[in-house]
Length: 187
Image 1 (cartoon, one colour):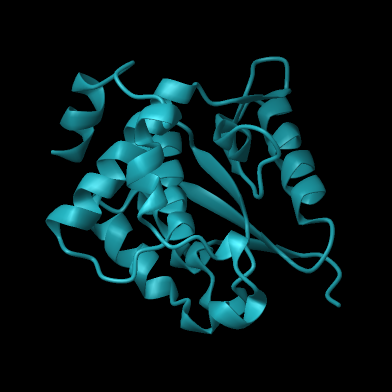
Image 2 (tube, helix red, strand yellow):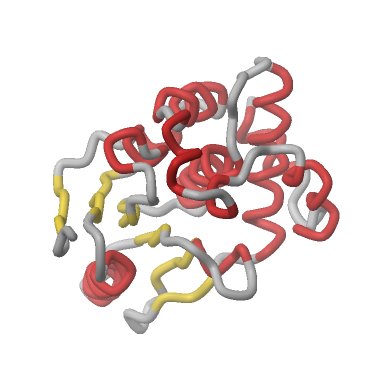
């Protein structure tokens, strides 16, 4: 059901159009760490469930730690892509565009940002599911992680390399059941 809606809305949304819907979700990236005590990975899990469990259609590599997560995730993603594996890399934060957070492996082994319409449509669908299922406490990051996993799975990727966010053991990315985890330095 979710796949059909995504396919029918290709090219329909941009992040500028989604700004007010996204703005209604709590964004802990703009809050202090103390506010993150309310974070709970089960919320992202409920969103993923409403989207048909996209993370279960992917093999995943979960990258956690204090420093170097983004670099390690990019290197693992590029190595897998260079070996011919269809891969998506999820990282945070972004500098200029939300699409920087989701990159897809290319035939030459490089990583390129996902198309804005592809990610925006997945976010739009995820917000629809949050509202339809009345998922209380859904944050901007919960919704974006679930939507990103959905978008990567919809692109036909075999593997997702996912950088852990700021939430530690309660982080939204803990919806993953990763056979491979990488721990960078921890401070």
